[in-house]
Amino acid sequence: MALQTLPECVLAHVAAFGGRDGFRVVGACRLLAEVRESCARAVAHAMYSEQLAIIDADEGYASFVDLLRDDNARHGIWCLDVDARIEWTGNDANGSYYVNRVSRVGRVRGGALIVVLEAYGESDLRDARSSCVFAVGVEREYATSIIGGSSSRGPVACAKSATFVNERVRTPGHRFCVLAFQPLVWDQGPAIGYQFNGRLAGDYPANLRVVSFDTETTGRLRAETLARDRTAMWRRRWADAFRQGPLPEGAIRRVFVPLGTWFSASNTTEIPWYVPDVAPTSPEEWGLPAPILARWRAGTWGM
Image 1: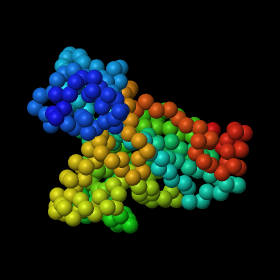
Image 2 (image 1 turned 90 degrees about the vertical axis):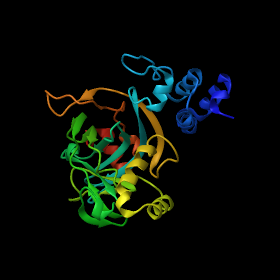
Image 3 (image 1 turned 90 degrees about the horizontal axis):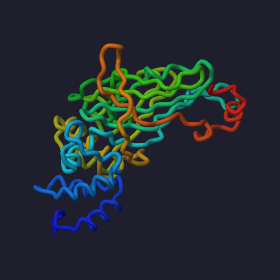
């Protein structure tokens, strides 16, 4: 039975059952030559809510079919919630202590990566704005750039420093910022990692698996794809991973985030990098050692 022949009430229940992960329904819509607008509206409202599935020919979409085909990119971006952490190598629960984590990554239309990064530590906590992301497991001879030799998952391609930074909290012991990285580097391999405060150097180890494709999938895709074609293949896979299919390893859930504030690299140039709607978290949620939490509650750490 073709999707467009289903009664609207049935389709609405199917879409609602899938919720925000009802990608198979949307994928079917894309493959059909014609989809009734009423069916598309039911799917769009189930996936994005009526508040985010907006039809406006002047500022958005002329139809719900167009909205679904474009992943509603004019109104928000698909993100992956994660919990990837890095701790300072010299951490001591009874002495100095520093920890940071990436809690969300999102892919903007065009391929740029949005990263939500937060850090807590002593009063000399380093700057989070110089953190970088990188691809792990790239094809060395076809990579855009290679640094640091290789890891257990293969050569590492490193992104430059963030193109744009929106720093929301900056105190001596607490940083919270949203970073935007240009495409064509972070998505070259089967895993995405990050380095706090710099480029794979210093006394903060790199986190090599913020999100990654599982070993079985990685092996199968490598076997099916010529080496010279793998960089392009991984980019396509990452574009899909934020929107549909099984969650990559390290991802907790997908979430559609409404477009937020624009921010720019200078006072004169505004480019639409969008800030996900996120807020700082409490150290109480980080699973920190009891002595560190006691210091935070007393106002002597992470302030």
